[in-house]
Image (cartoon, rainbow, N blue to C red):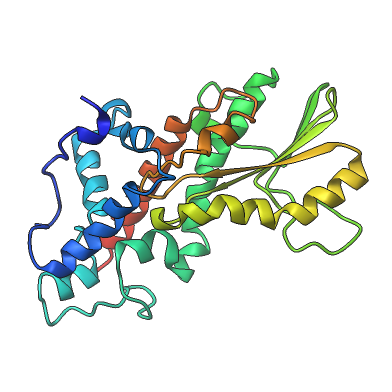
Length: 275
């Protein structure tokens, strides 16, 4: 059975069959799945191949359906008048799933960076293995160094590139300089809210264009920006593989998806456990 046709496990934290307000929230993710740029097969493949526990699967699906007990959900769907719908940490914004996974300025300071870096570190580990650079046997034990070098490549991790003129965006997650073929990849990972993945690839390409031009002039290398965009709740765009294939190391987008989903799950569980 195709992944997109697989029944969604009935393991939600809260009943989602209630008022139309919740149906409208649920519809955002489902409508996103129907849009032309989404690779539905790859997006839903985690349900049969990621090897997640059934409790984790159910939690992720509940998040996609907006059926987790956020404060907004408790106030507006479960009709609990004593619950403040504003987020429990900052108290400024409605506490929805979308706000928690990508829109909170407080979580952006640390948690979103951590989620992003987990997936980027996996790519860094794969690149190191591709070029025979010694490291940990398991990717999750890998701690990228600021500068990793071999006879054939130099790999920079989360390091600003010094330029002769002022450039706003000059710190991609990974910079891969290939000494032999005189090329350089600017690799940047992002895990936005799934409804925003449509625009993020173009945004990244535009963001690093000035850096491409400057670095090509300074280093004399052919520069390519490689945006890797994965929805925080697992959405994979049809163009994602065309970009991941440019990265040495046989990057598996489904492994990136699993890492992202687990990071999102950990984030949501932590926040929703705060009293």
